[in-house]
Amino acid sequence: MNIRGGEFSAQLYQIDPEAVFYHQWGRIYHSFDRRLEVNDLLARGKGCVILDGSPFAFKTPYLPDEKLQQVYLGKYEALYRIVTN
Image (cartoon, rainbow, N blue to C red; front, side, top):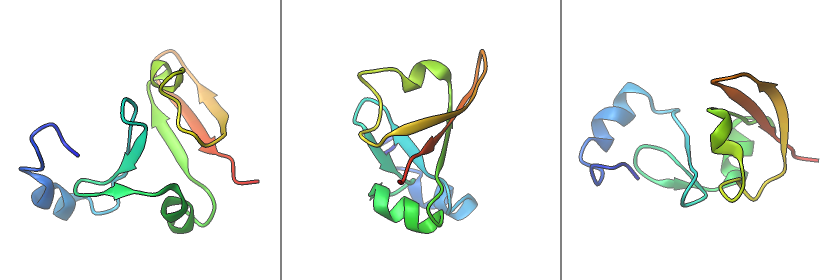
């Protein structure tokens, strides 16, 4: 899922195996080398997943399907929690 067609996925995974990303145009979660399901993320986060990014990235039509709770909204950064209940 990277712009180089996965060319550096193995090296990046070795640096940060816990990295997870939200691809706003594809509306999917992924690591350096594979697509991830939201249930897997919630299990890894023990029910708590925080999304960090720029505020414009969390506007429709690019929002994830999951319900989000705004945790912090700044000029250049926003934090959202995936609501689980």
